[in-house]
Length: 135
Image (cartoon, rainbow, N blue to C red; front, side):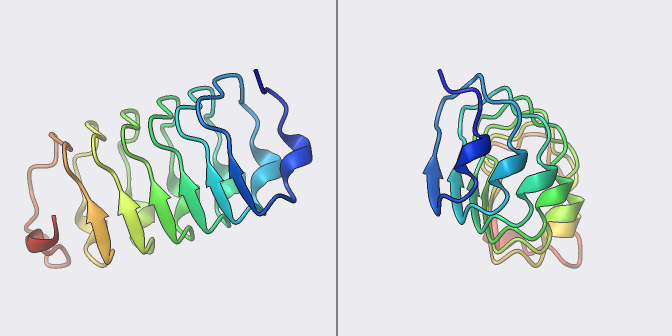
């Protein structure tokens, strides 16, 4: 399977679904649309903050998504290790469905499109910035 993606940083749209051997994604920060769903070896997302559309669904190795606040469309569904989403309040379209470790979504009240289906630990939507009708 694919392990080294260092030569793919100039690609506009890149789909590497289910490539569990990929660990280092530092060269992919300039890709416009990047789908790395089911790439369970990815941990460090620090280089991906400038990607426009980013799908990291079911990348279960991810615990820190704080570098992704500038991403326009972000899919982190099924990333069960993510707890803190406070840095993601500026994302336009955010899918956190099935992120069962998330408790506090108070910073996400201004996200226009927000999917929290299956976020079973989220108990309080009463933040002044959080409109429960959108959940």
